Image (cartoon, rainbow, N blue to C red; front, side):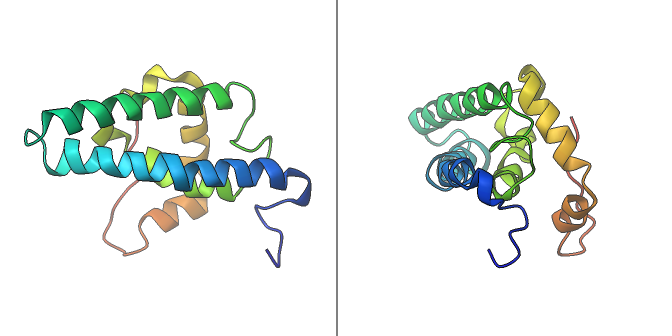
Amino acid sequence: EKSNKFYEQKDRTKINQWLMAQMGYVGPMLGQHHQFHRYNSGKDKWGEERYFKITKTIYEDLNERLNQSKYLAGENYSIADIATFPWIARHDWHDIGLKNYKSLTRWYKIISDREAVIKGFDCLNSGEKIPKL
């Protein structure tokens, strides 16, 4: 907050709203989807189906928001986008079909092309690349 970088005063309410949505909804629910669908596939049909549906709803909610603005909190890239992007970057694990969500796909492409995001995605220098569409 000292630099106000990616956390502009005029957008703080919306930034906080979408940051809280990531922390209380996107992250936890996609994390559960990863647990049931990716790491323990076939072991709990109820869990897989439940979190698949929730993941689809998350994609729909994000897409609906991004129909209204370039980024989650408005027209400027913010910490809300920074916090949410890594979860959507695992779209290949979700089996939802990111390409089915036009505005979410646009947002994903814009962010995945940012130099700092590319560098940050491979923070362990393991050669990991951002999943493409």
